[in-house]
Length: 459
Image (tube, rainbow, N blue to C red):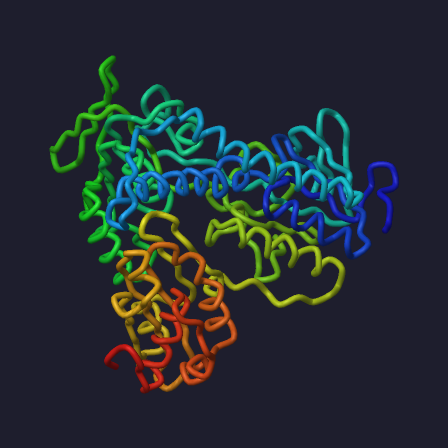
């Protein structure tokens, strides 16, 4: 492996989250010298404030629900409540073990890790605490932060997902502003923990970026779970008092609550880092790139949440690996957003990849769809979950979208991803034997039906 001579490296990476550390690990495998600059903890948002801790909370929520509902399965157990310090200790333990593993990987890889806040002071030079690090190539991987809305100040009883992950008690009443991924996941957790939850979403449906059929089914499931939500209405203000928070909506309605979670998405973390001064194009905070993740400045790349598009840790990993291979001259295949699997880990889970039905209609005109109801799936009945698997195909062509909802359906997105990315025809998938009884079988059943030979459903 080439060594960084002094403070000169083949690649200087600004940010040690999913995109940055994946790029660093792949680059050293390819013989490049790498400096990885991180002001916080390696692993970034996903490991410390995002995917991993929220999914640990969601698993604790699943255990709480299973305990409450145990009598349905003939198991006598009583639900005594939630011990938040112990829930947090479990969650933090998961994060800590993964963090130690990542630190070990980075250390054994021979990567120069620089702790501190970096700033571009030239297109190829990053300065940290007065020290300069220069790269033949620079990779911007500074990620994202929890956004708010104009007139919605974070503080006191108004929090973002960052604070929501470290709460020492379960709130009595919560209003969540934003009904997309982060909003519905926290709604799911807090409802399972015993809170009274109301979601406010300005767009007409919950999870508005998903296929309309998934939005409808999630709303039905949330009504059943007594999670309140108001769609197509905007918040107009919040007023904090000693007793709680009053949330005002544009339709004149007010809601009294103990806590407000602002879950309106994440914005790009690029301000004050010297990007514009170095000549890099920045658009409302985002760093636009071409399909090869190159910015407008030669030798400078951007990856992950900083680049407009899906904000997902696995997109960051893929971007980081791509850029390392691009710099090494391997000519990798571009990362296409529509081929990236997406999972929302509320209860029931939503998993999808590819085009929604409206997007496919717009792109191809003629399409065919097949929905398979989980009522016909043995394992889903054992787990007592409702939901469906929906396949979208180009007319007489390949499957271009897979959309699933049901408990634990995130685990089924792998095969869905292969179907879409390998442009499988339903007839191809129908040939594969899916194990019985598994939830995975529902994908096979949907493909059988779309191929015109349904087994446990009517085409």
